[in-house]
Amino acid sequence: MDIVMMILYLAIVLSVLVFVHEGGHYLAARAFGVRVTEFMIGFPGPSVGFTWRGTRFGVTAVPLGGYAKVCGMEPGPENPHIEAALAFAYKHGTVYADDLAEEMGITIQEACDVLYVLEDWGCLTGPKKEDEHNIFRTRAYTNKKRGIDLAEGTPREFRDPHELYQTERAQTYRALPFWKRSVILLAGVFMNLLVAVVLLVVAFSVLGVDIVDEAGVVQQHIVLTPLESIQGGLNYIVVVAQAVAGLFNPQTTAETVSGSTSIMGMAVMSKMYADAGLAMFLQFMAMISVSLGIMNLLPIPPLDGGRFVIEVFQKITRKTVGYRAMNYMSIAGMALFIGFFVIMLNQDIQRFIFGNW
Image (cartoon, rainbow, N blue to C red):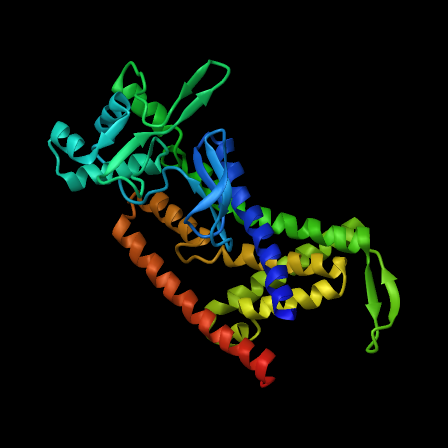
């Protein structure tokens, strides 16, 4: 039963905090007029949910982690066939890659590539499992005020192909200036840190915390002022940031990793804090929220910090980082994190199972 409760508490904490993080990306993107086609809790895959204002909200089959699919974040220079392909797709509603290739005089692979870009832009939906061929369809569209209700795969009327292209592109991340892209990338981190401070205010200034002795007897109940709680939260953020920065110092890397914990350790700690009361559990959530936010600032793709560094590089050099380079950096980043995960998991196994740490 203890193991079940550990998993349950940790799932609650991670689901809430990932929702907060991805919610930051979602709100920032929508504030700048960028489409977000999906907002999901869990790994990409089969899901249940609902669609509201062009975004599908839901929970996937594996409800760990989450993502907000912000349109137009594909790396590399813009596809040269995008304008003509968009006009062809909206004219027909349902598009076969080979038909588009024949119409535009390009290869089927090039046709597939540009259609997948249009899917990423939120203009089309991609092939379904039951489709025998590479079939793309215009998205379903409803506007009750204007009395418009178009089913998926319905042709769209437009006056001018270039005007259509400009309208659709304006709703993508790619069309934004540097500072707006930066806000979208860093909004998730900001939300995690903000929520951490709010949780600490509730824990210390609303609920208060019991100080207990070694026997577990309450010695004192402390209630801080909101200002003291905020100050404590900001101080904790600085401490975590300094600890994470220690990963890049060869003299402190081992110490930083040794003081970190894996998802196993987080599960054990989640039950310990939950058993200590609501205030302590909120404090634990705040700690994880800060860690999640700061870790996402690491300049390693595919983390937010890594993408932000790439945006800065592109802004300074006026060069575009291509898909292949982005893919290689993401693979290297994931390999690094897997390495850290294995080390920390071994630490937690030694610490919590064998008591050797």
